[in-house]
Amino acid sequence: MPRKSRRNKDHNNNNPDEQWLQAWSKPSAIGMQKKQILLNSINDRIDNRRRRKKQMFFIGLSAAAAILVAVFIKIPGNSSAVSANPWQELATADSSKKILLEDGSIVWLAPWSTVKVHTDFSKQRSTVLSKGMAFFSVAKDAQHPFTIGVNQQRITVIGTAFTIRKLDPVDLQLTVKEGRVALNNTGGNQLLTAGQQVQTAQAVTGMVQVIDPNAADWWLQQQVRLQNITLEELLNRIETYYQVKLTHGTINKKFKVSLTWDLTISLKENLTVLNSLTGYNIH
Image (tube, rainbow, N blue to C red):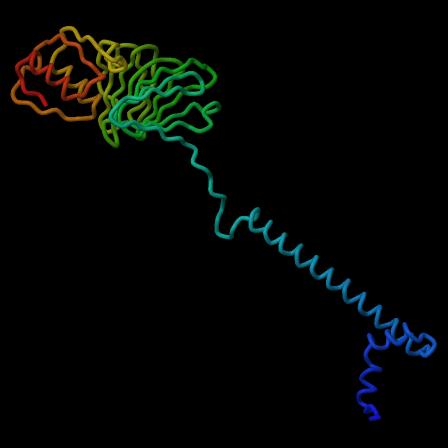
């Protein structure tokens, strides 16, 4: 029978698993020195497993800390976190729109108009007329004034009704139906009351004009009966409301007409009625 080589014998003797199998089957054949060696190998395995678990724990903890740092610590170079947009934008197309605000105030937007409302409106009653024309019916609240920004000008009220028209990137037209309105711009502060209208030039308030208070919101009804209105005034209202520039030949702007303007039909159809009454070709 061939003899095992010395090398194989030493290899088996140095294998802890083989030695433990031998110790399990023949415990009496294992000397004290080998028993101590086997016990030491078991302790080493247990310590290695514990160290691996600790390493995995600290790796996971480090990853979690890195995520928290990325979320809560500001990126170098940014002085502040990106803030949310404080304005909600509302716009119209070819028809008017009624907007009910949190405080009970109402905003009517004319066609092709845009207004921005502060998202925290209950604490800050602020709006911005970005485009076109709007009629404001403001609920009274002495503790929280209502403001409207137009270009670099500001209108401040407590409780009133008025129309603002943005003329261009600088100027505006303000028509007061009821109450009092304060207009502040580079020319100073101007207080207006019901039946008054102003137009600014280069952000400076012009002469105050006295007008019919109903001119401020005539377009809020579906059908408006206009009695003895001059063509000049009528065309001005039409161009203001529809955001258009009408063309025509020679006309008598002081000529007065009486008609019903129907806001439920198109501008073209209304102009057809006007032309039939005047004999002009306004389009």
